[in-house]
Amino acid sequence: MDIKKKNNCKIVITGGPGSGKTCIINFLAKKNFYCFEEISREIIRPGRLKGIENYFSDKPLEFSDILLKKRKKQYMESSNLSLIKNKPVIFFDRGLHDIFAYLNYTKKSYDSMKIKLEKYSYDIAFILPPWKEIYKTDSERKETYEQSIEIYRCIKKIYEEYEIPLYEIKPDTIENRVIEIFKYLKLNHFINF
Image (cartoon, rainbow, N blue to C red):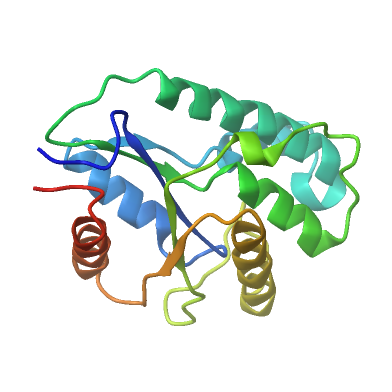
């Protein structure tokens, strides 16, 4: 097994809402890869029980602060995982940077959220563009398709600002998107299997 580094590669699957990220993460998890799931919904649901209909829109800084703590915990947990030679990658359904991309989208100042994002880097982020044919809202995904396009742009911009390599995965079947991800990882020597 030949890999670029001696620890697991941290790989983000990102993009605007409803672009197919979680389907890819679920597919990878079924193949026994380390995957850290999206945790926004586990914050949204208790908020709804408290009468907060749209937690992020109603209380963006409070929501983002809770999300930040949980994503930092995921990041730290991933750093402590043992290197597995036949699966030397860890996948994240969104990264820490996504939190600030969403805040940038809402034009909310987050100076009070003291964090140095450069301390939390990823080896690569695979970004999924908006995909109108599969896009749908639900009780927790409130954004319109047009809003998802703007959020996608904010996400792309923040990963570029922090110089995290981005590679766009075009709309396709889950299996073909995963094949494209691994083709890229192999071609760029992140993995050799």
